[in-house]
Length: 88
Image (cartoon, rainbow, N blue to C red; front, side, top):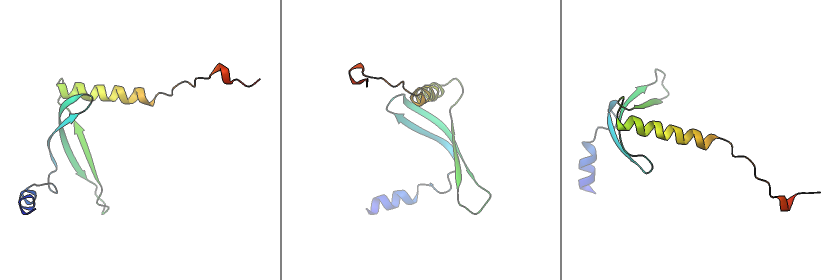
């Protein structure tokens, strides 16, 4: 729409290299994270986007919880064998 185009043109997405973003995560809830974008020195156009939370904040606690959940999901689950299907 014309209204969207006008609003989007004022939104500085290309040149926004640092700031704060607010997230609503389905598991840990609200988080506010600081971000910084670093352009690589080659001509690849690749960028590194880094997020961090303020120390001792609820956002830091949320990130730590997400990290713990991710580590748990990486643990291999033991294979369960069904005694009824044992081969003799």
